[in-house]
Amino acid sequence: MSGRGRDLLLSVALLLLAALYAAWFHNDRHLAAALVVFVVPPLLLLAGVLAQRAAARFWAGVLALFWFSHGVMSAWAHREMALYAWAEIVLSLLIVALVSVPGMRARFAKRRSDRQQG
Image (cartoon, rainbow, N blue to C red; front, side, top):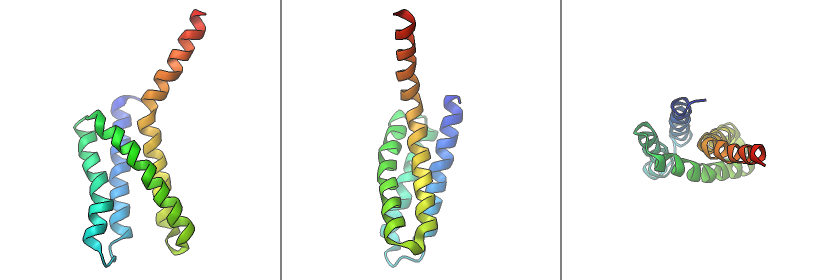
């Protein structure tokens, strides 16, 4: 997958995550806080990815680890919210995978070239 295709898929995943949080917390009594904590970060990272900022990809990967943890905790503790939690888990894993691809390719390409030279 090309860098552009990966960034497009990452953008879609971040947008879906923000939409998931907006739907999940729409009836929360602390709606403003929920929006600031859950909806705004993926949207800011989406803007950064669309602007082709490498830092946005990095921070998307870092925050995805928190989102993954939140999803696991929610799926375990709040069975009535399991659908939201599992969607959060899947999207966060997708984000981690997408931001990790360039590094993984570079790592394994180096190993392959080392084997071919030796």
